[in-house]
Amino acid sequence: MAQNPRPRSILETLGEELVRIITPVSICMLLVVILVSVLSSDSSSTVTVNSIANIAYTETTSDSTWDKFVGALLNSLVFVAVVTLVTFVLVLLFYLRCTKFLKAYMGFSSFIVLGFMGGEIALFLIEDFSVPIDCVTFLVVLFNFAVVGVLAVFMSKMPILVTQGYLVVIGMLVAYWFTLLPEWTTWVLLVAMALYDLAAVLLPVGPLRLLVELAISRDEEIPALVYEARPVVASQDPRGGVGQRRVWRERRNESESNGNVGSGLGENGSTGLGDNVTANVEFGNRNDLSLVRVEEGRVPDRGELSAPLLEHITSVQQRGQGDDVSVDSMLLEGIGLGSSGSIKLGLGDFIFYSVLVGRAAMYDFMTVYACYLAIIGGLGVTLILLALYQKALPALPVSIMLGVLFYVLTRLLLEVFVVQCSLNLIMF
Image (cartoon, helix red, strand yellow):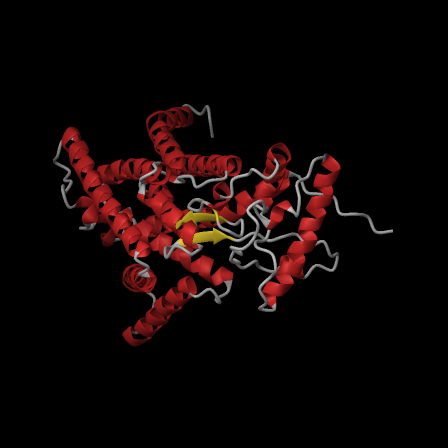
């Protein structure tokens, strides 16, 4: 006699969602640390990059600590002002429905990052490891690599692993170039971007909030570089198959009734524990059928596939509030939830996480471990808050603040303690 599958707890599903978003972030940070470590002895590591991030002040070793701090603060203010202006221009162009232009611009930017930044880093590695390769072969490989990357990021029919892989590579390349900025400018810039992210997402007039709300009102994708950890529904069939396939984003049917927050909530509200367990089984069966329709190219009758991160919380809210749950709180994207329930994380978050650990790798690996744990802990806290509040949240503030704090404490206190213990044969 076949037994009914045991419903999965919120701890199991939450852990899987965390792993799906923490894994690519960890890979990106690891690749940046490896690049910094390998190229640290190369002459390129001593070259200061001239960019908008250090246009107001150029740091020199002869400057005093106060001068470096004031100059880094000026650089950060200029950089944040430029980012804010560009984001508002992006909102304006999106409002005017210049979507094709925005996609073309994003594709061109991705090609520049993969082709030029990636090509220069590849030249550093070829020179460092003395790889025998001719110019023609190198240019052909680099051109194909960049073109495939642009197509993978902006064409939805590409395999999801290829798209996610290229997004991680783009984040790694940009993060490595940010690590070439002067030390004081890098640290002050990280804190400034964390504060900017907090204001841009949470303030009513924040550019990122305006962009997200505009995309929601039109039911359109934001033309930006965003990593999406697509949910995979566990198969109820012992033979497996459908439940293990990737889930593609489906558009919400605008003609659905306002009382239905998402297909993960079922047809009507659950009022008891038994109803909730039964509803969870029905969610899995309906999701399997939706997966079959998606793979066969048919549009499902219902809206979205259920997100494991939200099933438990939304069921509790529905039992307590009935049909008065706000649809807008479920649809806000950013760092947060796509309409398919998947967790989305902006590529800028990947970049600045990796910049922090990359800068720490220039000093000592003990600080790298501390900063990595701080960043992952902060990201976990942010994702838990996302599950609780169910709205777009900034991903940088908690992780960056913890990372900077752990870097300072490790460099000033922990390292001194460990070195003294080692010299006196108390440890190691």
